Image 1 (cartoon, one colour):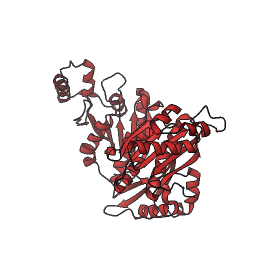
Image 2 (tube, helix red, strand yellow):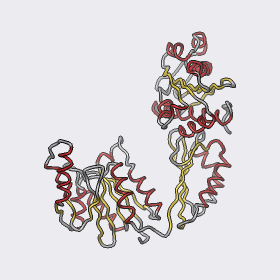
Image 3 (spheres, rainbow, N blue to C red):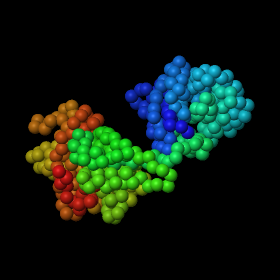
Image 4 (spheres, rainbow, N blue to C red):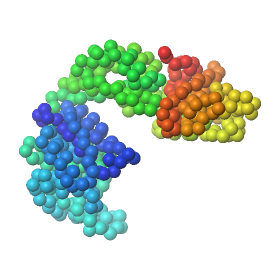
Length: 418
């Protein structure tokens, strides 16, 4: 494959809306990188045939490999086959074996097959059919003018299976491969991370370096091109340098989130945790239980949204609520201590605060208190979270998990690195 690289195209009008994100592109970019093929462009296009045609026409003109997902279903808005056929000036022809397979598939499910499903048997003349063992939409592979064009379903599980089992073995890779690493950082903002790592970034050399900010977390993404059989020495060097500068602010790497690191530390120590949540409304518990096997260290939670729930389920004294209020350091300490005692865990973690738009008499929206109790006692701290209600709750959950992580590392101390 020459140096023009690859383009990924995600097809589907839903991907242009705010509630749906394309995740296939990240997967494809990573897999192609492993064989030394750089994805130079990523496009998202809706279901208008003229728009799909325009995107393919551009991609074919600038890349050696085009991988597209979506638009291969049986409905009237599935137009990828038609668009690519038009761009290449080739007809669509019904593949008898695909049509027979579709009929068998529906018969095995005791369903009548709508006539529209035969659209999935339409193959661009000269294309190889990519079998889909998980679904009804086959893929197609064509070569035209030195460009390889691959059409895959948009359903992630189907696409991944077809990509790994059928497409990757047929692709010609580069002389080396791309190695990726993401370092996840908590407790610092994007600009502060950039400031602290300015000298390290200046030594990146051939390693590509990107800083990305999300709610309560900053990611440093590294990419290095290495020859076959070589280790990513540049990434390893930068990882060590970043960790040396940022210390405990580096929470995890690659696919592992903060909840995975907390789980790993709890298992390593043979300890357990319970959670009492107010402002986060169960987000901390949800993230902890997103990790397979978390029942070994997470024993339960209480969403104590009202004062009476804080008393009944987390053991907060009425006198504390009257004197300090539901959103206070004193209350969050007792929430953490109470849930720990009630569930008999090594650690108790708690959150309370004002997510907004309403606030307390003396506290603005975004003020959050986090409490942590262990065998050495209880500690708590106050944070101010920027953003709207959703952002404050997400940042608070992230900060609570990071507080627990630091407590596990330090044996209960809650003070943050400066």
